[in-house]
Image 1 (cartoon, rainbow, N blue to C red):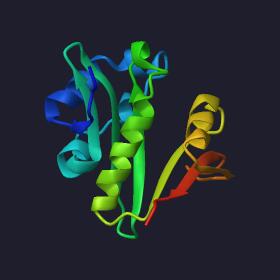
Image 2 (image 1 turned 60 degrees about the vertical axis):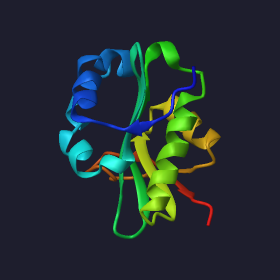
Image 3 (image 1 turned 90 degrees about the vertical axis):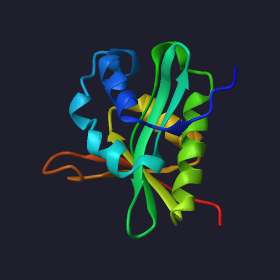
Image 4 (image 1 turned 30 degrees about the vertical axis):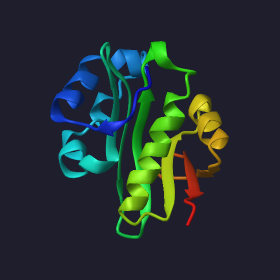
Length: 148
């Protein structure tokens, strides 16, 4: 059964938080999950729903300068390696382009090798930027243009 990303609802947000370890393992990233994202940027906050729950999600928004910024993207532990992350990114890119985005951007820790490999596999350029998230906090910044 094909799963199609759809705009996230408030109940989806709460389900994602309840199942947080299924997406993030031992990393506690709940503080990065903001309900306001779903409420204010609904068209670019997407979930992949199935009968057995939310298999993956992407939360992002479009900046005034035309950048589709991906704040969080995750797939559930039993659904990794299925291409769902790629489908979520494609759905986000389409939604962001519909709001005028001309490029995509995301960030991750320089130690998150899985994320770096994933984004490079999607055609993103990756750059380590010193002090990106405050003094001494180097982050990996991903950028990719959207097709015109």
